[in-house]
Amino acid sequence: MSLSTSGLTPAFQAVGHAAIEFDDVHLGFSEGEILRGVTFSAQERETVVLLGETGTGKTLLLKLASGLLRPDSGSIRVLGKDISGIPESELLGIRREIGFVFQEGALFDSLTVGENVAYRLHEDGVDPDEIEPRVSEVLRFVELAHTFDSLPSDLSGGMRRRVSIARALITRPPIVLYDSPTAGLDPITSQTIISLILRLRDVYGVTSLLATHRLQDGFALANFHFDSRSKKVRRDSSPESSRAAPTRFLVLRAGKIYFEGSPDELMKSQDPYLRRFLI
Amino acid sequence: MEVLQDLAKTNILKVQNYSILSYHSITNLASGPRYVQDTLDQMDDIGVGSLPIVLLSGFFIGAVMVLQTGSQFIRFGQASLTGDIVSLALVRELGPSITGLLVAGRCASGIASELGSMQVTEQVDAMRAMGTDPSRKLVTPRVLATLITLPLLTTISVFVGLLGGMLASVLSLRINATTFWERAIKILEFSDIMQGFMKTVVFAFILATVGCYQGLNVRGGTQGVGRATTQAVVVSSVLIIISDTFLTKIALYLADKLF
Image 1: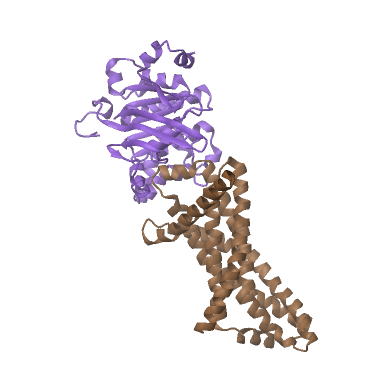
Image 2: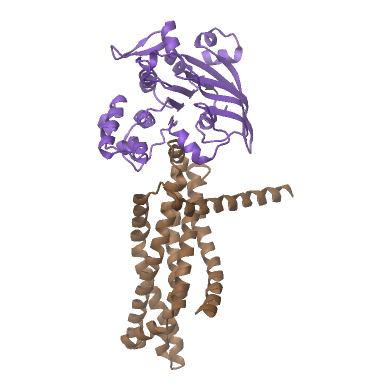
């Protein structure tokens, strides 16, 4: 990614190379094989929406992409580096290039919101004087600046997810993985989370993998964009916007990629299984 | 037959994973990053936090030792030997093992439940996802803190035990306090202190690593955390008692050969 070379904002640069590539990835546990030869790639600044029923392996794909799990066979490349066979010590470095938003937030419950968000900066030995402004900035981005000193247990489910997003983006990683970020939330809070994700995409130009079982989340990401001039989220399905920040759907079924295509292709599909998602 | 094979494989895998965790808990110290503040926090929690129970139990164990042994020595007119035997028993055996078991009950369970809760709420995965090695951040500080504080706690426990024994011998056996104390100190040799110290270090390592292992290998949500907590106490206590036998034999052999 060369975000600063052209002088353009990341969102208006051309889509580049594959940021994440899965090649014939298999993964199983004692109860059987869950992923049976998954192959796909996510280009730089592309949003790939992973759809599928519960238990089809969406979360596993995210954990494989971040190196939290290792495949039984096949290869996974992240930012051009094959991570499927490298030692844990090397993986720790690669994970610093990836933000991970867990389903329930996975905030450290003994640390305050500010300390949670600042965690990675403390780990990297960033100057303490520099930490507080950066944490305040990302908390403002997720509109939770007032929760700096609160404990995660004092926050609602939606607020915890937003803090988790703030924690993931504190080091401006080029890749962000979202594990069902709207699961179990009411429609209004879900909308807030999705608008935050698309702001993150359009402002910072991150590559995203988003696992969800809610089709509307994917369509919202495809059809809405953040206008940095008016600072508002607007419906915009123009080809220019789609090219700048493309969204693609992957549907998982029985451990394999069942469908891969654009939002339009998914909408027009007559496949009975896919139609079940569209109801 | 297949069931037995699976059982054997599962248990061998557990031993292997425990050995790897234990090995890394120490080798992590050789390279950075080192979590000094986390280690100090754990020393406060494990060391200072365990002090009240160690003081209280140490005092009364010393006292009850005097009451039990003193009554026998009086029958043979050797009541003055009470100080000798209480001192040897506390330094070589009761101090390390009782303190080890008490701290295992309090801290192995605490470590297992804390790390277990972090595991089931994906906090450990979140830590790994942010580029932090949980072995360095969570395991090594707890193991190091226990290795430092358990010998100190044992020393305090033995001292307080001798005080309890002295008080009991003065009040119950009418032995002079100075006589008790002089005999208690005089009987001790360097090998006795080394035996006690060696045991506390091994017990500390066992209780901290077992607590961490059980916590980081929780399966099955909050019920799993409960199981891991119980397992941590049971396994570490049993291992402490078993290893005590072998350590005593080794210490006696070394004392015979070296000192």
